Image (cartoon, rainbow over all chains, first blue to last red):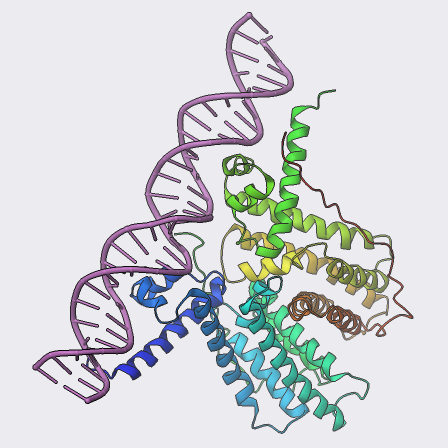
Length: 223
Length: 223
DNA sequence: CGTTATACAGAACGATCGTTCGTTCTGTAT
DNA sequence: ATACAGAACGAACGATCGTTCTGTATAACG
């Protein structure tokens, strides 16, 4: 391969992490296995782990990549909307859409990671918690803007609104996926809109997906 | 006075499962390990697995026991309240309390299991989903009663209310635990009350009744 | 050109996984 | 007194875990 080495390495590692994100979104960050991931990528275990040092560093890289993916498809795309309720409304739509369209094959990555590390200590716990805190801060900031602009009930605490939105999206997406009811996400969306005082739905579903997409990716538990 | 053999066996298995529930609420149902659990119980791996047949059956037994524990401390204790909004209010309080008082050392058991199996197929997935469906049906039934009695907005869909309550409790408890903020559960409670149209809080925390004290039996090593 | 650094494969490590044997012990029934 | 059933043990199975070491091919540099 006459590829330039640094580029090849960087790109290769990027692809590695992307594949690991998909796998970990199903199996969990803790269920990630060097042997299985290496086999899926067609490389040796030593070659794979050599890119990260050890497994925990690999998990951290995977987590960071998943957060970046979420940030890109939800936060970044909402930046063009004016701060406040309007941006909050767009965030909710993008948030639900990213769940509906299987940006992560196994459902919301950070939710999975949150459950895995909510009762443990260590580097992964800290990084997951930090990511959730950052996201809550974003939501709180927008909620505060909305409240200051009079678009949100003056009695509503921005931090409480942020926490409520996060709880609904996190818990609701899991339940919708577990029960195999894509319509559950409509309920989550409605509840999130209710949480910020928006009407159940605006005119038509402007972000309507063409088909329900029954893509249920499932992995055999064993062999 | 020699105990009858079947009784002794049942009790021993019950203690085994109770310990496994505590362990699995932290490590996850999938993170349960026969070797580690056996070591913690002071028995051999073969002796432990012999009680269930294989690991999956043990996981199923652990899941069933956890569901039973939840049912006891939340559903059963709310039965004395009149059906409808009043019972729903009590359920919310008991629900939050069971999270606050660490009925499960690692947080809500079914939430953990939901995340673990929401993207997989098999027996465990089906049983978790069935448990969630049963619980949603209970909540929906109470919400319908409340609506029919005029205690809930006539425009509120009981199934949507049930789903919203479940999502809030599930997602909120994880976030509160992950962030290490017990006050987060107050937010969850407030949001759940808001979901059923109840005022943020009734007077003071009237639900500071003595700890429910779930049966937490400690197993003693065999002589 | 030679030298050096890097990336990966291959092999092996100790540990642990779930499972399966054969044995032993205990209590009950015949 | 004998036979049997159940539970648990200890040992071992093959598989897989994360990690480490060594050899080698290639790319980068002078």
